[in-house]
Image (cartoon, rainbow, N blue to C red; front, side, top):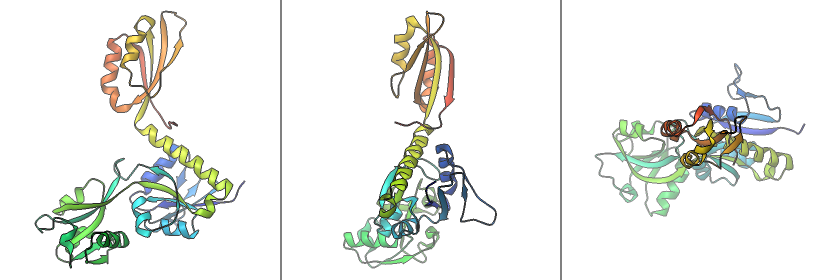
Length: 292
């Protein structure tokens, strides 16, 4: 066996969705009682460590971790020099990327970053915000906030910079999005030393392949059906195929078996049409991984 690959797993809102993604990809993480930062894994080459995603880029860059999963927003905020192995488009609620936004009260009159001149901003993204202000030639006071920024406006600060997936929390606090600083998705990152180590490089490439395959499979399903040979061309014309369908002969020469992968959202309309065209024995089944 090779040595250990120290892997940072994002603690907090992404934790459960990350564990679920790894489960579909083939790795089983479990939390042990009394070891809240040290999950166990059925892969003995992995040494996982739960950390705030804000900290993971820094620890990966410094070599304390070999690799980790974190948002592109935190890589940018830390200014970390790391290798990006792959992009993994998932989050705590949806598969949409998150936005890091400047937000202000609806009735504040703040319409752009220029309106923050001389004002106060609360955020976890101090460095990212400061660079954005500098880029636009705005002088404002940026203070670090341990989350819950929404409750600080307008009594304590004039505006906030936060990440949002759906915007619901901002709307609930009577806040509007003024500008989007960056759009972020989860990334698998690695430090340069680990990436130059052959077995770690291969391990992470394999991990990326399987994690991406698990994400691809989330929106797809497989379909099997029996099709009259004389109706085959008509039925094939209905199929929004990932690739050409697999067609196999049956013992009855007038029929063939057809198997295809399609987007799950198309099935509701597709199945009745397949039935009307003469397909029988239609079976829909879930997929665990799809490797392109």
